[in-house]
Every structure is written in structure tokens, then in C-alpha cells.
Length: 78
Image (cartoon, rainbow, N blue to C red; front, top):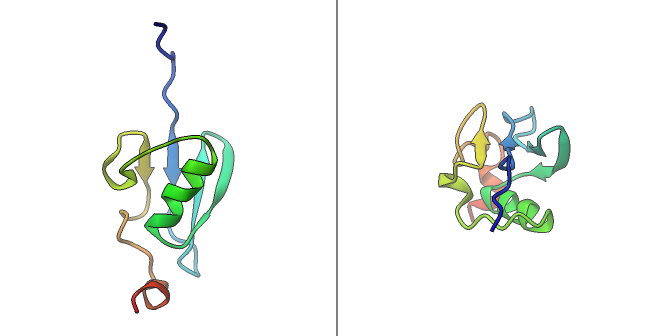
């Protein structure tokens, strides 16, 4: 079986002023996430089935990790 020559490189960018984070695959925008679950759904919709977006080598978290959603915690907390 042939192996892909290049693994997908997903970037969850640093939080914007509203706390949301852009998600890209290389230069291609995939969506905007407001929670770690959004990242998993965005990747699923892009046919990238990543079971653990928080601890996967394919996903690079910039400007904070999967728990960093400044200003948005009140929307998902209760």
C-alpha cells in the first residue's frame, strides 16, 4: 500500500479579539471555531477524521492550546 508523501497540516490559529480561532489546512481556510469541539467538527467536514484534536500531531495549536478560548468560556460553560 502506498503511503501519502505529505501528511495534512492543520493549524488552529491564535484567538481573534472575539476569542474565535481560524482553522486552516495548509493555505486553505476550513472554518472558524469557538470551542475545541468545533475544531473536531470542522475537520470531520473536511474528511479529516481526527479522533483527538487536542493531542494529535496533525493539529498545530498556535497562540494557546485547546483550552484557550478567551472571552468565549461563558458561552460553553453552563
